[in-house]
Amino acid sequence: MNEGVRRILEQMERNGYITDSEIATAVYLAMELRKPLLIEGQAGVGKTEIAKVLSSMLDVDLIRLQCYEGLDVNTALYEWNYPKQMLRIKMEEHDRRSVAEKEHEIFSEDFLLKRPLLEAITRQDKAPVLLIDEVDRADEEFEAFLLEVLSDFQVSIPEIGTVKATHVPYVVLTSNRTRELSDALRRRCLFFWIDYPSFEKEVRVVKAKVPGVNDALADQICMFMQGVRSVRLIKTPGVAETLDWGMALVSLHRDHLDEENVRDTLVAFLKDNRDVQKMSGKRLDVLLSAVSGDGRPPGDIIPALRQQLTALEV
Ligand SMILES: Nc1ncnc2c1ncn2[C@@H]1O[C@H](COP(=O)(O)OP(=O)(O)OP(=O)(O)O)[C@@H](O)[C@H]1O
Ligand SMILES: [Mg+2]
Image (tube, rainbow, N blue to C red; front, side, top):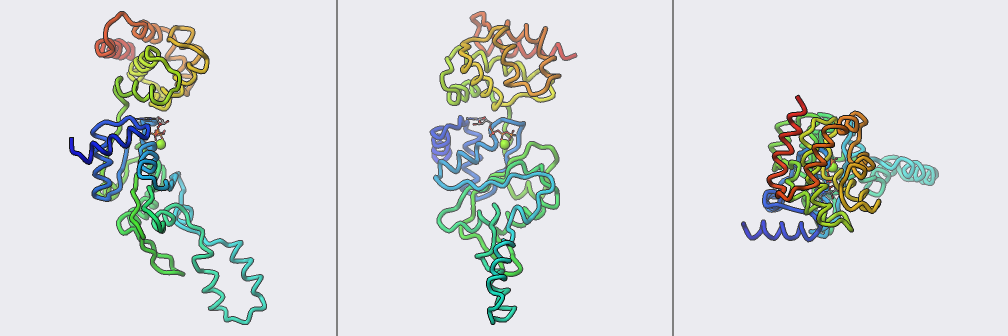
């Protein structure tokens, strides 16, 4: 492994993010090439967390732009502080300066409300991490605008002029793929896909993030989840749900999985009643018998478990 990649891997792990060489390489390249990193993957697999960890390991601020349908340039870039402008106009009613001079004053930086994109490119001390979260939820027009900002790292404010980035921020974009992103945006970025984790990786995440979980319970939870993901559910649980479930079990002082413990806590990782219904009965029996363990290693149990559950889907 390249020395730089190894360093990133260690730093991410030290900051609580269980990392493999693919993730570390993507982060390393994004930093070296100063390209935005576009992370796609299912819900709850650790996309957003990468930006958070990056900011804490670089010890810089995290500036987050949460995307949604209808997000517009004003909310993302800047707005004029109208109340402050109005107040100033009122206060200066009897001031003899010309209208042009007064206008010049109230359309200056002091009256600007910086929104995340402008905030990110005008940081004076250090380059921050700019997280553009769930970019697939924003409209295509907004994506086109974003493209401009990400290519030049400068924005033009008619009343002030062009504002150029003091430091080019580290940019992380995430997407759940609710719609296809444009080729132009993809071309600008380094792309990384995060899949559901392997059993071994998920066990490490659980042990790192669920205080008080014992080794056997962590193994059982993760084996169970590896199986659940081969059931066709409306909302397949991600790592976030595995962690919620782990915390729920620990806080109820349940130290192993059995039928009662699982039934009592299904709601911690299933978010739709149809999924709860589907997971009861035969599927639950199959999962419980697999996780109660017959001494075989997880590497043998999980493929067989998946096969059994997939067979129930038809
Ligand atoms: N590799 C990992 N190491 C440590 N924690 C992880 C890892 N992957 C996921 N997590 C944890 O799982 C939870 C969900 O992660 P995150 O919010 O980043 O997911 P996401 O992919 O952005 O989900 P969504 O698509 O719902 O926004 C967080 O609590 C995060 O800390
Ligand atoms: Mg997220």
